[in-house]
Image (cartoon, rainbow, N blue to C red; front, side, top):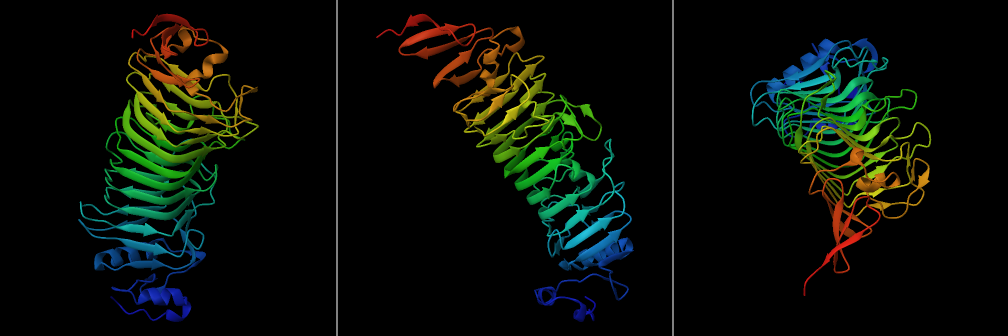
Length: 430
């Protein structure tokens, strides 16, 4: 590695990092330190620095500063190269593209043993967000498996984080699109295996004008643990076709693509969505929501509801130990299932609903179940569920059988056609 003769302009921390095994490459181009003031365009310099560092196998440190760019920054390598790129923090080491009509930072290292890491860097453009999708992302992981993204912020792009060309077994920690208007779509997972499978995300904070997370059809193997998500700034109503979590619908092409799964959501919270659904699905889905909080807290531009599914078909949804906090929903039912649901299954554990939750201005009590939110209008063909759907109401399990339900209560088998009045069907024999 070529000697660096500019230690005087770097912090003691950077100098200390220089002494770690292999040495950290501080950014310079042709022997000249890369401008960190944001005054000059450093696109070519950063690309050259990254290329040389990856080729040499050097870990690289991007010191605090603003790095003005006019085109995509590419961290590319050969088969099974390793990338270690660290910044001083998302608000200190900032790549600042002049436009958002190109990607911010792309990592492209093929192979099955790459195992790289990008951490502590912000990508932020001040250009206005596009009103229609342009497919440009702050961070793009391109055909790079086993990559760890950690402590990264994405601001000012159509998409915050995008995975393309099969990035299997990647993981993201503390990724953020910090505000509703930071991006249009916080995380984009593409059709089929284009994004890859066995993707894991931990403690993410995704906000978007359209969606926090969009997952296209014909894929799966996605796991989300912890974090807070939201969508839709109040000034831009989106409506019935939009959800904080968008399933079975490709964000980039704005087209429905079919079913997907399995997906695991665990320990997350959706907070303050406006003018949209919390979960919006367009085809069959296999997904589990475990210890999930649904907080539709906005008093104005209210959340439309918890879940809407079009063509549920063979979907299997499981809600376990979920919570609905102090919330305001715009409609009188928060779960809507449309189209073909002949084999649809919705399994529910107990839900806690805080006092103060309003469903179309009607207060809800302590225990409440989404599939029974239609209780205000009774059951009818509009709300029919497939045979075999099970749920729990008033602490008594029941099984839906199309236009009605059966339950076992106090030693008797009972049936109901409206979910409210029950008649005995028989007594259990001793």
